[in-house]
Image 1 (cartoon, one colour):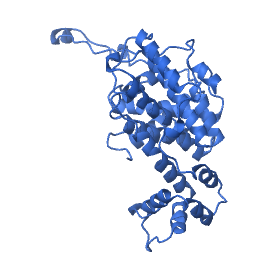
Image 2 (cartoon, rainbow, N blue to C red):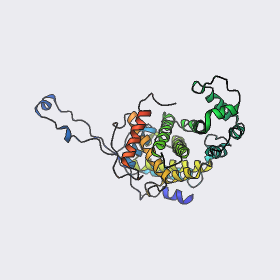
Image 3 (spheres, helix red, strand yellow):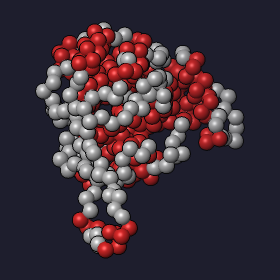
Image 4 (cartoon, rainbow, N blue to C red):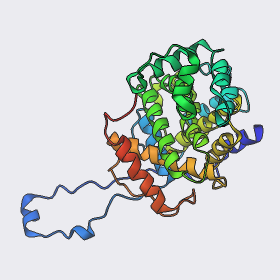
Length: 354
């Protein structure tokens, strides 16, 4: 783990670039009437690569303006050293994240097996009163309403089925962790992180059809930014308001720390090995493209969800193109289809499943 942390703070990786979107000219009406404009020659919005998307998205999360400063300033260098003391190696207390059900690792393994029966699953869930209450609440909603009332946990488990239980457990566990991320640097950060998690999981499921395990793909999307919530709380406690908008390099370093904390959280929660490996590959993607199928899907889905939220919040134009050289190695056509599907599902400000 110390080796991973050392790589986080080396500075030989590509720097995040600020993208300047061209504004429309304020030409006078008279000049507009005397000169014709060939629309085909009007430049479209510049294509965004992964570094561009990251920089814009995390500024949105932190409620922070764009910055033309690329290199770290001296106060940021000092702050990064402080963050290293707090988070380097295994110094950050992952157990300080909101509680996860003690039965979660065992339950996820059980739900991964299609041979698991309702009695065994109900017996395991029955050991956690909070999960019992959530299962009963969900199955008694209008969506699951049945002719006969649901009076037993086993009946509720059978009604939800494996897929429903996987989704319910994941949502119940991760939503409060992500929505709890708020503070001076990002008043709406928690809701934005949760919106991103839902949309990343959805895009990942679309991209992974026929290639990766659906539940592991969904889980990787949901937990992908669990560590950044902890990072926001640290920044809120440690950063002086006089620091202003972060430089691109400092923000990129904070993101790497957040990704590292997400990986540590996944290890602490004993999530499936493929999910942990995908998070590791996402963390190191700027140095080495992901190799696993789930790692490639997670990287692409992560950026698609970021683009969606940037567009919905007016930070970029809808349909802003991506660079053609894809680090994730996925087909550009397939990724664009996933992007269109994501917009159909979550493409309005009031269309989220909160």
